[in-house]
Picture 1 (tube, rainbow, N blue to C red):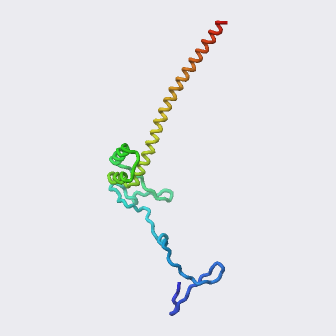
Picture 2: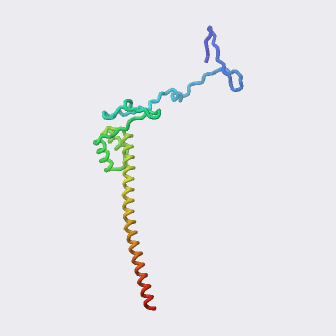
Length: 167
């Protein structure tokens, strides 16, 4: 940078690593400099809030120095519509997500998260049913095994009696 003192241009001097004085030459602004000066708005969403959604600011609570939002509960109509859609197909493609987003009045990301959570619950329920079926089969086979073992013991006893009667 150059300073103007009484009509003369004075060049600033900087000290380099070796202690010698070098003139300061400003560098051209980097094309990435906008990243350093940009104010990010992390709460920005391109989707307008639904009329029943609460606005973030009044619902914020303070916990351990962090701001949190209250969990939004879905209305019964929204859940019913999402459940009907889930019953038709468990997976969600982009076009279907956008269509549901408009119908339900939620953001596409909320729809995607709801489907992800619903699939997790569905899978857990499927595993629970599978476990119950396997447990029932095991119990039936275990009882049958015990009956067969008792029958084998009776037959062995009968064979011993016959062998001792022949002697």
